[in-house]
Structures are given as structure tokens and as C-alpha cells.
Length: 258
Image (cartoon, rainbow, N blue to C red; front, side, top):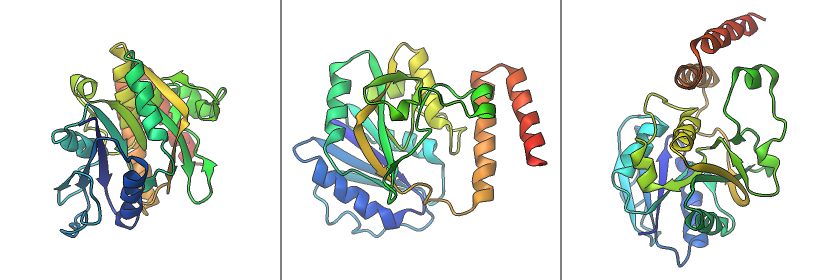
């Protein structure tokens, strides 16, 4: 098996069929499987995969484990040499995933690749989906000079979004997979930084495109914000000195009071 496509579902059943249809259409003649982790408390119908001919595995968790933990669970069943993590509210419209896979196969020094993500139905490029490591400076001043997602050629970056992230299974397992302490947000950046620190490169590929119905899994904005800040704190604790995390929380408190 060449490729294992891992999808973690939570409240995105309405988009799943379109996602899977796009995979079957665009990945013809490619050896791949789909492993779907259903983090939703409502089980999927037993015949959900009936319309599709590709190999598949459905893992029902009966609870929301979080994105990273769900991906790690799926990896235990994955048979592919490469892993493609894809959001359930995303879909492909061309064969650029094959080209991204070729890029990764041809360059053994590259550990992860990501692509250009288009917000759907607006069809505009989604910002902040790759780039330099998140820092206090970039948070405070929204620093996006040389924004990688606007690049017209492959560019080396520190991280790419978990919305559509392609990597090597062996490497993913060697660095321990996603850190399950990140329930959601920053787990992709943490993974990429650990892979980069192990000696591999991370690349943004502008020819690799994915469409994304952004944020359809969550309708509670306050809960999203709490989870985001919690994950941000974990990220700064792991990848920055203590004083930066302290200063970040101070500025967050000040801005909240405005």
C-alpha cells in the first residue's frame, strides 16, 4: 500500500461523502486506503462506505478524542508508506495530491509537505496555513512578511496545516506521532517542528491544492477560543522560553479587557 488517507470526523458528516467522492475520483490508479476515525458520538451508518470501492477502515470512538489522538489511533491501522491527514470538510478537485506525493518520494530529505488551501465556497486562499514558527512577535504584530501561502514556487517552511498534511509513516512513528496533549490547534505545527528538528525539511507546495469548508465542525466560538488558547499555551511551553509564555498570557489578559 502506497498511501493511507486519515480522516478524523467530528460533526462533519454532511461533508464526508463529498470528501470521499473526490478521493475516489482524483486518485484513480493509485494504491491507497482510507481510515476514518469517527469522533462523533453518533455512529456512522454501517453501509456508509458502500458506494466506494477503495479499501477502508472505520474506527468508532464514541467520544471526541481530539484531532491528534484520533490521527494516532488511525495510524495504528495504516498500511501505507505515506500518510495523508485530511480534514473531513475538505475535498480535492484535481490530481495535485499525486504530484505532492511524487515530490515527497523524489526528495528523501523532505519529511512533510502541505499545499495551498482554498476556502470554499469563497474560493479564496486560506491564510496562516504554513510558514514560520509561531512566536510572540508574530502574534502581537500579525507578522506575515513573505507569507508562504502566497508563494508561486515550492518553499521551505517551519510548518504546514493539518488540514491537508502529507508525511512518511515511518518518520511519523519515529517522532511519536501527534502530541495528544493538543486537543485541537497547534498539533500540526508541533509535529512539523519536531520532524524538522530531527533533520528533515518541511515544504509548502503551491501546485498542491485542497478545498476546505473552514470551521464546520465547531459552532461554539467560546469553546473554540478556550481550546485555542490552551493549545497555544502548551505550544509555547514546549517551543519557547518560559518568559515568552508568561508575557503572552499577560498580553492576552490586557487585550481581553479592552
